[in-house]
Structures are given as C-alpha cells and as structure tokens.
Image 1 (tube, rainbow, N blue to C red):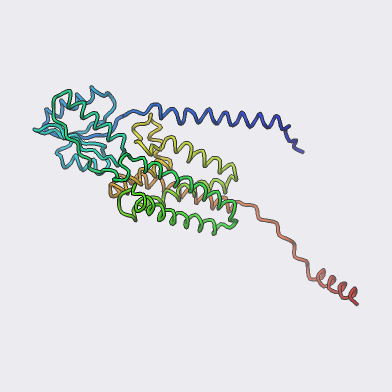
Image 2 (image 1 turned 60 degrees about the vertical axis):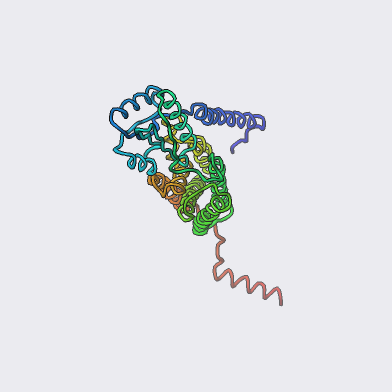
Length: 341
C-alpha cells in the first residue's frame, strides 16, 4: 500500500516545484524583453550604385549587425519586397534625397526604428528624408496596441474550450465536433469584433476569420490532444508550452528579429508566433508571407487531432454490468411468483 506523504512534506514539495517553475519563467519572460534590439532586420535599398554602396556602408557602420541589406533594381522592386513581407523597409536613394518606405502593420516598433534611423542618417549626411507607410495600421489602432491586446483573448478562450470539452464531453465524435464548431465560431466572432466593432484589424473579413479559426483550432486541438493521452498533466504541459513559452517568444507586439536568437525564430514555430504572423498577413498584406505560418498552424492542429484519436483508441473500456443468463432470470421470476402466491 502506498503511503501518503505528511502534509508538511507535501507542502514543501509543492513550494519547491512552484519556485522551480518561477525560476524558469523569470528569464523566459524578462530575458527577451530586456534584450530587444534589431538583429539582421531584412531591408532593401535601391538607387545609383555608388550611392547605394556608400549608404549601405553608412547604415552598417551606424548599427552593426542590426540590418540585413539587399540591393534591388528599382523602387517598384523595393516596394514589392516590403508588401510581400520579404523586407521591413525600403530605402530609395534619388536625386532629391532619401525616401524610406515602411509597413507599420508588419511590426510597429520596427517601423518606428527605421524612421528614427532614416532621420539620423539624414541629419548626418544632409540628405532630405521622406517617409511613407505602405501598409499602415488601422486608424483606430495607430500604435498596434489593440492588435496585440485583442490577440490574447483568442489564445485564452482556445485553452478554455479545450479543457472544458475534455472534462465535460465523454464521446470522441462529440469532442471533435465541439473543437471544430468552436474554431469556426471563434473565427467569425473574432473577425467581426476586431474589424467591425473595434477597428483594430484591417483586410477582408473572410481571410481574417479563417486565420483566427486556424489559430484557435491549432491551440485547442493540441491541448485537448495532450489531455486525451496524458490526462490533467497533459493540460499543464499544453498550457506551459503554448501560453507561457509561446507568449514569451511569440513577438506579437514586436518582430521575431527583435528578440535574442534563436528564440525569436523558435517562437514562430509555436502557435502564438505563427498565429500573429498569419493574422497580420491576412489583415494587411493580402496573405503575403503567410505560407510558413499556415504550415506551422496546420501541423499543430493535425498533431493535436491525431493525439485525440490515439488517446481515444488507447482508453480502457468501461466495465459493464453482466447480463443475467436466461436460467437465472427464469428462476427469479418463479421465486417472485411463489412469494406473491
């Protein structure tokens, strides 16, 4: 017979366990936030070859390691790189000075950083600097705070839906129906609220709703699948991986390149990071740059649904009451008749 540890021992063990979790979470959250800085931010530059060479050298000497500069043929190619989410900004050198094209919807802090860098370069070289935002944020969310704040209720409700279905719904088919129904409704409601009501997300309604639905399904299916194969500990694992780690490394309000590497890139392989990238692409860039994020979210959703199936097939059958045989049933009937007589 297993002995239950004394309450005092159990209390100490729990305290040590939570303290250990705290020791892991503090650097996970505080470390990236304290070390936010540009790291190889992709940018493009175009103009006369001598001017481009001099400008690139100046940019790299001013901020070593901050930018990954690529030269393109002309202004149209530069704008295409920004709108296709291949670069965060385009520097266009011309006779009248420097023109900077940014896309604040891709990452508001990065757009501000480039504007400051362009102003600094202009002041240092005497060039006239013009800034144009090719993909501005919504007028109701000029700094992007609404997008980041509105994103996390989608994550929290996805976790809650997965946990509620695990404890409240016993049947496999009903659980799948609940997950898919929730994902579709969450996409529709999320797009309606964020676009039509709050105005913090741009774009067409259907792509935005689809992006939210895929994010929600990836999160809820993963947590529900882990719960199905591992029980409540699986829920804890899913919450830690998706919410805590994913939140710290997702760069929802910033950009992956601003985080210490390889953690910024790793965050894009988790549902929160991929979901934020997909939603931005759907809302402001007509889906450009969303391919990798879609594959990440589809993979999480498929793995989660597969875990649900594996857990359901491996469950222990519930004991059923034995059916009385015919002779015993007949004997009981005769005894009852005799007693009644």
